[in-house]
View 1 (cartoon, rainbow, N blue to C red):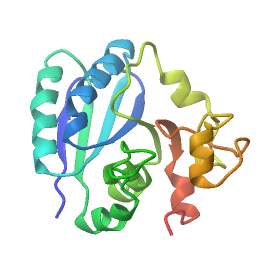
View 2 (view 1 turned 120 degrees about the vertical axis):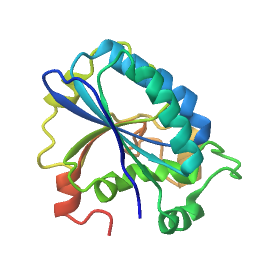
View 3 (view 1 turned 135 degrees about the horizontal axis):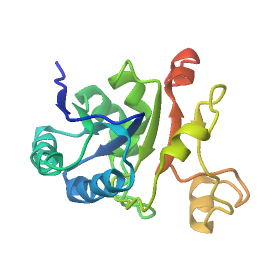
View 4 (view 1 turned 90 degrees about the vertical axis):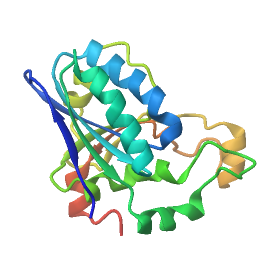
Length: 193
């Protein structure tokens, strides 16, 4: 079975659900990202993390303990299932000529609704970002009730990507490093299947 580890500290006024998927290579950048979010956002934040193994989970827990001494948040961590690792391994790009930075764990963005059943809305961030301001407006103001995802288009797509995926540069494309997910929509429309 999968274990959930929670660290609960004082709460403020609203909840923001923020998700990350990472392996051990992104733990230290994650700690910087979490610090920047918590420093710039005084509301209660629930972090949802999907990690690749116990080593990553333990390294995160050790570092989260350091942050918990002076910041308010709740953290839920789940380890990626072996069946999901096997399924997504065919999309791993570590040996690709184009994008060596896309690992199996990056596809966990698709699995937050499955791993955390009670989750309805999630701001997904890649773990290597610094947040320089309050992101509650981003989380709250976008009406995504009838949409599965809110993302910013990246146009035009870089030529090397358009050639790789076989699409024109005016093809609608977005960087999935900052996305607002409506997981109710995903569940109701059976998006994963």
